[in-house]
Length: 474
Image 1 (cartoon, rainbow, N blue to C red):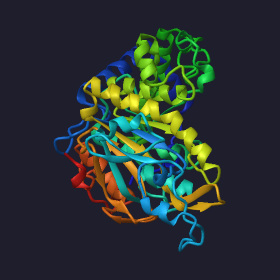
Image 2: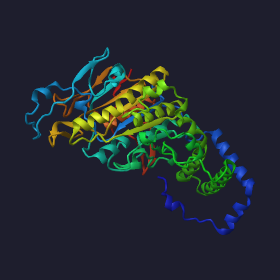
Image 3: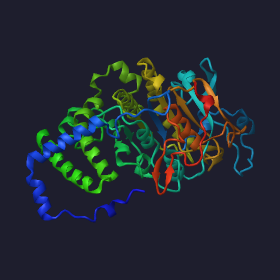
C-alpha cells in the first residue's frame, strides 16, 4: 500500500540543501530537462499501453445526463402505461402514461419518443440498454456509483481506469477530459483518480452558456476570461522561456524529493501534471478554436442557435478532442430531475441535446470515427412510471435505459427489458458493474485483469462483480 502524502513529508529541506540546489542554476535545470526527455523515451505512464486484447473502440465519449432522465418518456415504450393511465399502481401513486408519442425508426424499428426527432434518424446506430439498474435511488450515491462503481468509498472513475489501462494518445492534451461536470453529487470524485496515480485524474473544462458564444478565441490565447471557462490558460506575466525555467526548477526539486523516496505517486503525478499544463498552453487554443469549422458543421450541432448552442459546443469539442487523441471525454448536461413540471422541463432538456447529439453521431460517422469511438448516453437512474406530485416522476434505480453507439456495439439493437409498466428490469439485467465491464471490454481491457494494488488487495473498477454483455457486441 502506498503511504499517504503526509507521511512522506516528514523530511524537510534544510536551508543549506536548498541553497545548494538553487545554486546549481541552469546546469541543474538542464539536467532536469534531460531527465524528463529520457523518461519520455523510456515510456511514461501516460504513453499508450497495449490493451489486453484487440479493442473495438479506441476512445469514449460519455454523454452524461445528470438527474435521472425518464426512460418511459424517451426510449422505453410502454403501451401498457396508456391502458392503465390514472389507475392506482401497486406503489400507491397512479400510473402515468407518457405525454409523448413513440414511433418506430430506421430499418431496425426501434421505438423512440417524439422528444428526439433528430436522434431518431440514427436509430440504426443505437444500442438501447433497457435492463439497467443500480443500487441506490439517491442522486449523489447513484451518480458516484455510475462513475466509480462504488457509492460507499472513494474509488477511481471510469475515465481514470480507462487512462490507466490504455494511456493517452496525446502528449499535449489530457487523456481524460470532463466538460461541465457537476459540483454537487460527488463533485470531483466523479472524474478523480482516487488511489490511482494523480496523472490519471480527469481535467475539468467549463463551457459557458450561449450568451458568451461570440467571445473570440484570441482571448484564450491572451489568457483573458474566455467563453470556454479556461481562464489563465496563458501566463501574461512570464514569457514562455521564463515559464520553462520556472517549471524546470520546480520539477528539479520534485525529482530530488522523488529520488529520496524512491517511489511517490503524488510527486510523480505533480511532475506529469505540471509538464502537461505547460504543453496545454499551445495545444488547447487550437483545439477549442471553432473558427476553422464550416457553417454547415456549426449548424449540424446547433451552434449559434437556441436552445442548442451550449450543448452543441460541448459535442463539437468532444469530436475535436477525440480527433486530437484524448482517450476519454465526458460531457455533462442537466438537471433531468423532474419531480414536477415534467412536460415542460423534460421537453426542454431534450430540445437542448437532441440536435447536438445527432450532429455528433453524424459528424463522427462521416469522418470514419464512429467505428472506433464508443458513445455512451445516460444518467444515474431513470424515473418511475407512476406520477410524483401529479406532474412529474420520482427516482427509479430498479430499471432504466442507457444507450451505446459506435465502438463495436450492435446498432439498431435492444438489450434487456423492463416489466410491462417500465418499473423494474426483468430481462437482460445490466448492473452498473456489468456496464463498466462491457465498456472496458470494448476498449480491449479485461475488467478482471485491470487491477491496482491498494490497501492490501488488487482493486478493480468492477470490484468483485461484473459480467460483459457479449450480445451487444458486434
